[in-house]
Amino acid sequence: MKLNPHTILTVGIIAGLVFGAAFGETLYRVYEADVPGGTLEALHFVGTTLFVGLLKMILVPLVASSVIVGVASIGNPSDLGRIGAGAVAYYFVTMVIAVVLGVVLVTAIQPGEGFDAAFRDQQVSEFNASTGTVQQRVQEAQTQGLWTAFQNLTRQVLPANPIGDAANGRLLPVISFSLILGVVLTTIGARGRPIIEFFDALFTAIMQLVGWILWLAPLGVLCLVAWTVARIGTASLLGPLGKYMITVIIALAMHALIVLPLILWLVGRTNPYRFMHQMREALMTAFGTASSSATLPVTLECAEELGGVSKRSAGFVLPLGATINMDGTALYEAVAVVFLFQCFGIDLGGTELAIIVITATLAAVGAAGIPSAGLVTMVIVVEAVNDSLGRVGDDRLPLAAVGIILGVDRILDMCRTCVNVWGDSVGAKIISRIAPDPA
Ligand code: ASP
Image (cartoon, rainbow, N blue to C red; front, side, top):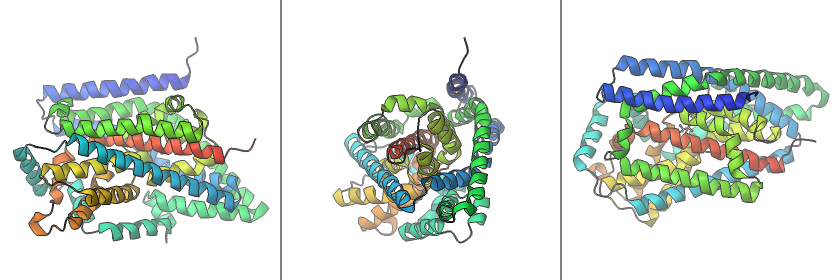
């Protein structure tokens, strides 16, 4: 019997996830919740350098070539406008649905009701006392607010120095510039052909490379999952934060398994669960890496090779989706913010919940496709709610409240990233209908 390479890889990645969790849990128990820093460091190093690092290595040329070729193959700017508008409409509608679902569930389940105040205060003061990267990023985000976030986004969409951005691995400016270049190339006729062919060849070569890098996925996810579980242990699901984690997971599952499939079935006329199966390697990579950007090469590969997504659609709907369409993050931010206010005994009214729906959607758009980005942009939502409640000084929900959920964030990050990538894939499949490949 000849085994299909995709089947072997799928089994390998599932084994990586399972053994990673088992290994992490064993370490957690053997070292009684205090796994040596060196061991954690080694797991993280192997996972990020060997697997995520290689995916990141190819990301910028892949995104540039995929967008240029995708846009050039659409050709006509008015068709491109129609497809782009369709994609953006899909992104916003699904993100708003996700946030509303999150708000409804967290309000119904009330995971923060009667929360252990001693545990809460201890986490908050630990957060205040430490100087980790998340802490710094949260402090920076506090001084920014919605207007600055909007300005940053606009600057990325209209980049002054796209090559500099590319060198720093910022994807949105690269997408933006490639989009413009792709359109222009089609308007200059035969003279543009060699450049389009160059990027087409570059795209094919890089996709070949993705196929090779994917063989490292089982080891990569094993190390990253082990690293995550070894730090907090699976019993955290039963601890004081258990109810909160379960709320997030149920809400994400409902969005991924009911809402998005329904949309795909109704609008995309596709069997959603078969499509989910075809996207499995991307979804598992998203879960293992907690980064939709790093997963993008795998998403492109699965969508085009197995999922029957048209090259025209995949080429630019997926890269754009990986940077701005984050259903999982939007939903998570809403649940987390309402939960934190509940922990401090603050009940939110209809106005605040409406503010959360709007700001969580925008904050998710602004979040980069990297681990814990959502945790940081969540600060924007917290501040907007504080302002709406008219709370000043010590009365405001302290930003250090983020410390309460920081410890368990990685596991939830893995889950929401998986939903983010699934949302992008569903969007690309739907857009394939209005942008099929030429026969
Ligand atoms: N890790 C998420 C992603 O890459 C972003 C986040 O919610 O933190 O899609």
